[in-house]
Length: 282
Length: 285
Image 1 (cartoon, rainbow over the protein chains, first blue to last red):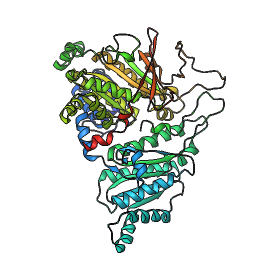
Image 2 (image 1 turned 135 degrees about the vertical axis):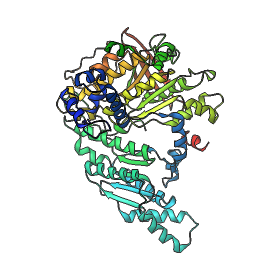
Image 3 (image 1 turned 180 degrees about the vertical axis):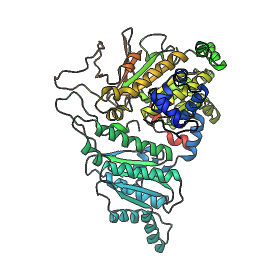
Image 4 (image 1 turned 90 degrees about the vertical axis):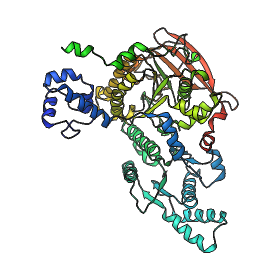
């Protein structure tokens, strides 16, 4: 709900806002949905000025349609396929992780999700020399295990001389940035930070970021679900939305992990959806 | 003076009104409970849990629309509003490649040129986007199909933002529904929208607060949860569910209800497995 205020767009002056407010037009939505002829008569403002302001507000706050052909061109040039470090998993995923998509790993505890996440981080960092962001919400990330994986993957590549391997593994470790986030708000703000960094396109020491691994999403969401309040579900939907927007807008491969659980709230008439729901349609 | 201003319309609006929109009658006859659907002004809702083929059906309809008449399509333009950020262009291209007799890059790009895609991140942005799209409908007379995937995406977020008042919770969606109805009526469009099954009937014998108004023999777990304005504007509701067949075939069932005339039809469809994993071949071509 964006409230109208002076300076929101050129042509929207303080007096205009006062007059509009007196006629119960307070937010952008009120302004855009009201009949401008009525408003111009009641508030004795210029119709042309109101139409101009409406056009600017719509241009500022609404989404623009893109043409399918342009989107296709863009996607062809910006989509990359990232190897996961395991050839059979790559085959299952149609040759790897696609950027611009959210690929969710679901499984019971102890089924190997963290190991796959570490393997993906190692493979992207060592093989493609790209940066990886690892959001750890369970405390399951251990650098020593990651180093073991890097060593194992480096041994598979025969090109490098013995002296170089240690250095390249160290560099690979440096390209993996780990953030420990233990509740959903910390996770949302970490994602916001990534978004800010990428949209400014700052040439920082972190370099090109193509992969975001989140282990795990359900650890921060489960404490919020249950009971009759819907805030937990709303935050879960918000988090899912953030992940999808990040993947689509910046062409990243986002890999969240989770555990599927069905909650049944006793004798209420609503059965809450499982955490798998928000990322449906992948 | 005010009246004259109200009735005046621009040249493009006049042309758009007089030229008329192409007929969508042959869009997908198997999908509808009666012949001659959809007509302009129809609002069709696809309802079902995740993974039941709703978005896939939308891709099928989009492909039917954007393929030129020479290829067996309707050659009309489509506006696709994606609220979930999950529209997959590569998947659509795979479907087009299988449908077109000569699937050259040029043909595919020409078909895709008839598709417009918008992403919305909140119900407020959806409303404002609909206002700004109104102009587009006037200037593109061949744009006769509007798709919203999905219209229930903001349900939980709106419910949480609205606090205790049901009115506040539903207000954004109600405004969107009212404006969509106005757009569909004034510009002679057909609207397809998907909704998720996020509420299920409780298995206990507790009283249900939402008595099922639909009386039909197919037992679907349908609980209406979107606002009344939306419920009243829907003319056809199509329920999607998975078919539990033996074997590997991906079968889905579709139950199509014409709400005003109470016709119900049940059909099934399947998706060829070969379609599913070909995004890589599209990228490498």
